Length: 175
Image (cartoon, rainbow, N blue to C red; front, top):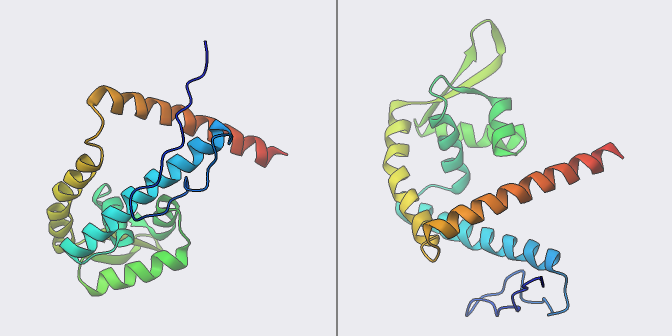
């Protein structure tokens, strides 16, 4: 059985992407990697712009509100940094701005004043709840070129890729 390899596609009109410089002879692994980066960047660019235009909020702020929405009791600063995959310094600046806007509050953890717990305020919950269905519509729109079966297959394949990448990262760390 031969491996089906898609020909290199031209970039979207008026744009440049990671696949632009690919040649037909480049390996499929490299082509998949660059296709994933291109797709992620295209989707992220659209979501960033839509959040800015519709809600006057940045993607990092939205992501922080999303994490806090999942944890009504709040999260420690370190856990927020881990979930957002950013440094504590980056999170601190975000938190300070959102506290000033009244969207979140920050308090010392009971029994350990060194730990700060951050949670949504009522205003923050209301703002996030207003954004959620609109954000979902944007993502649905981006994925509209695929049917439900294709999306399920893609999700499964990306899960397998995630496991493979995780194993490879573990192997690299072990050497």
